[in-house]
Length: 108
Image 1 (tube, rainbow, N blue to C red):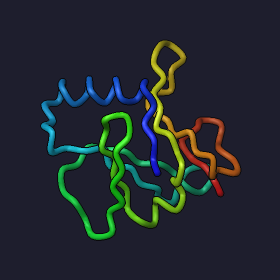
Image 2 (cartoon, rainbow, N blue to C red):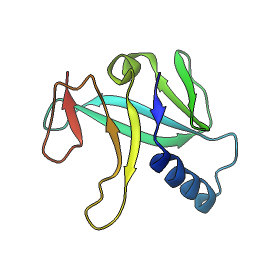
Image 3 (cartoon, one colour):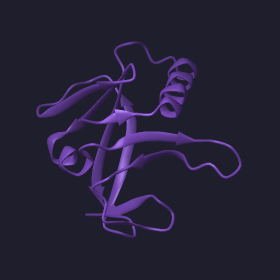
Image 4 (cartoon, rainbow, N blue to C red):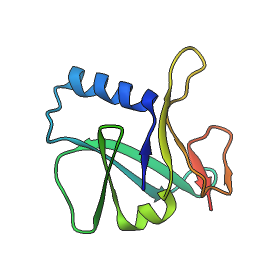
């Protein structure tokens, strides 16, 4: 399961409204090679399903990932932090053994 914190839900709603994304758009997250620690997160809005998509809905937000990425993201919570010291969107991933200083990449 993938989870969406209240803070992320609110920001996703703001972006959805400002960018004009309809109800057919969902949040797509994935994990790719790269970054200081070896793996990095990617997040975008999408409206096209792909083979092997894993689909979850939490807190009223539909979140989709590919099967390979789900192996790294299982039980992860998408969060948002704003303000002067805010990180923006970030992933609270219990599977990450270590993360880099900037929080953009991780290792398992």
